[in-house]
Length: 337
Ligand code: 13P
Image 1 (cartoon, helix red, strand yellow):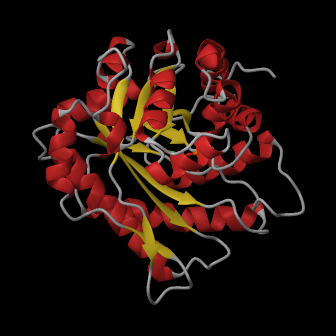
Image 2 (tube, protein in one colour; image 1 turned 90 degrees about the horizontal axis):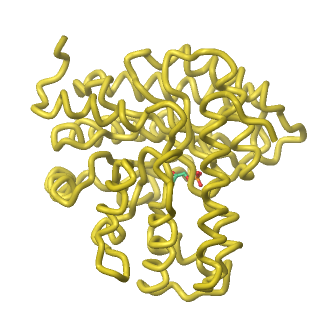
């Protein structure tokens, strides 16, 4: 049953399914140059192209990564880079059966007229950029916008976030890229888990309203939600079981089963917390593939182990495989700490 005029419809569905395959999830390494610089600074390295390349080479050439990782989100610079031996990063991924993806948004900017909130830029020229990325080997895209609970969120900020995501999703599909739809509801704040649920329901309702208006093919998208948790500064922490219950309740109320995959962000949770929460969500069958698209929760130990030293590369790759495998087990509901 066709539900899209995109000439890429069949390919989009296939790409989304292969990313949402059992026991696998996404490695997010799409930090902008500025954010990558912060990660490098944490181990005393300057933010040069050579250091960024060395770090990404370490990650993308980890032997056996494809057993646990189905997709990798890259920043534009990385999509066009190669290993020091001259092998394109995109080909390293393909050899491991990992789909290359690309961050296409241009970052956040203050949203005038709102409650000190922001909006996500990048629609200008997006169609031609997406076509170029496809030629370079990318098959999925990501656009991250944020919503802040303590700032409101205002009706304007939610509408802008949802509308921007829907425009981006339609443009991506038109150019053969599966869009990851990511309205990140920030952890910051001292609000309760019930308040997060309320905001998440509001945001996702609006996102799906505009996705439908933009004739986006739901079978050819992936979501990247935040888990529903109390604010990071809330007095009580929630257990993985509570987080799973709230998050799945929100998803069941808002996300049609036509969507193939839910790939959570880690949002500042520790590595083990992110794994335990995902595992709790996979204790009973879900209508969608419920998995991970972690950046920090897959990279923290890797960075610490590497320290920028060539002699530590192998150990750092092992550290990546440990987290990737743990999250793979959590995707299957079989992780134990
Ligand atoms: P974290 O898992 O560190 O929150 O990163 C999420 C993200 O959007 C990166 O693509």
